[in-house]
Image: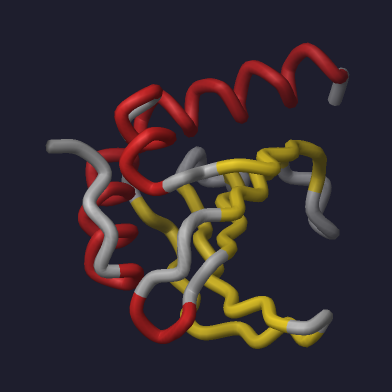
Length: 107
């Protein structure tokens, strides 16, 4: 898996979440991409604090061409997994994000 492929997957995930509107509405920052332990492409995003103190998430593209999402609460170097979703279709990304964080992805 090469660098350009990982970058393209990350950019596509951001577009599916709403692109620039998603970034503006959620305060998304410190986005990074790479591979998870299963060698699947993944995107890490830090967002404004939402409900359940969620302020970070990781979205991975799995071998079924579906997404796995993990929401985290990160505070004082302590990382707590809040919720996890496996085998998510792209059209479900924004609904799950809004439900879990309470943050809107667009106006």
